Amino acid sequence: MSKNSEQGMNEFALLDPEEGLPLFYPFVAPEAKEELLDTLNSRWIGQGPKVELFEKKFSEILGSKNKFIATGSGTDSLHLAYLLAGIKAGDEVITPVFTCTATNLPLLYEGATPVFTDIDPETLNINFNDIEHRITKKTKAIVAVDYGGIPAKYDDLLEICKKYNLKLIADCAQSIGSKYKNLSACEYADFTTYSFQAIKTITTSDGGMLSIKDPNLVEKAKRLRWFGIDRSSKQKGNWENDIKELGYKYQMTDFAACLGLSALNHLPILIKKRRDLLKTYVENIKHDDVEVLQKDNDPDYYVCPWLCTLIVKKNRFALMKKLRKFSVESAQVHYRNDRYSIFGGRVKDLPNMDLLEDKYLVLPLHHKVEISDCLKICRIINEGW
Image 1 (tube, rainbow, N blue to C red):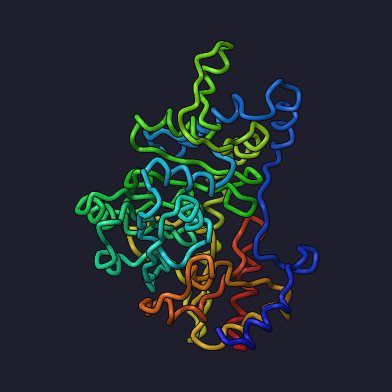
Image 2 (image 1 turned 180 degrees about the horizontal axis):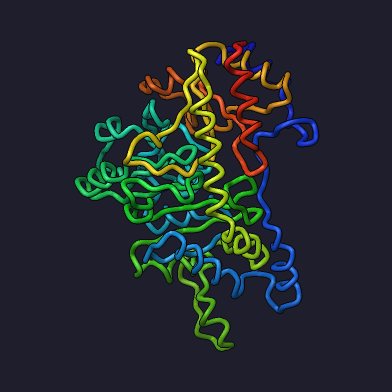
């Protein structure tokens, strides 16, 4: 990205919803207030029965027999996944360069090294063909991220993991409800994480979920989530509760679970609307210099989109300025992680990421966006910039 372009980005402050169409808008179910009032009138406002109920109902919606534990954030879930996978200082983890920093920062907590791979130009996900040559004796796991809701090629990733005895970790922060070859990511991965951060498809204000395939790790996960303490033993009121593991404060609260439980009732409608909005963008953007990133034209993919991402071949910044002129917010949202100093500097052998770094742009796609809004945005783009 050029210096002038980066300076120009400062012109784009967050858009007030009353002034136009913001990029994101949190969904809060109408019945959430009643759910919250019920909790306020109970003895449980921290981690209590509604957290367990949310875990149960979420697993039922996914139709998975895995065990699920709710956390304070998607980042918490990722860190727990890395701990449960046995990732330690000195280990290497194959991970996509293009993702939220939350995917990779918890690896640094443990002193592990993220080994960045290139992107698949059709999905912006991890590039399956750029993994194997990066595996060393230090490699312990592969992390896949479902960018924008498009699932990774989990069967191929699982094959590599089995070949090299690696753990497969799926970051599904952006892909609740998406499937690859008719299966959710949690049916492929050893550990799968989800995010309910404020602007995700459903929200608990902030929160996450961890799916664990190995049932023998569930109790350990619960201990690590709560200071290393076995809560069920502690609540018996006697001293049978030694702490032998370094734990964290990663639990979800019943307040957060209230938002999640009420939102789950609306999830099918929210997913349908997001799919309809993406379809509208795909069918109505007709400019030669713009391609809409999507995979619903491929039978292997069922996409529950969190983002609508454009690949803009010429002058993305000018298109952003034109959209803002019509009070439409757009942005990049995520950046290649090797731009951040904390990860050690830019990686040179990522040609697809280099090619697309200045070409992707995200459009509004959420429950407040109407089909008419999409059509307006399509017309603005089709007129050129």
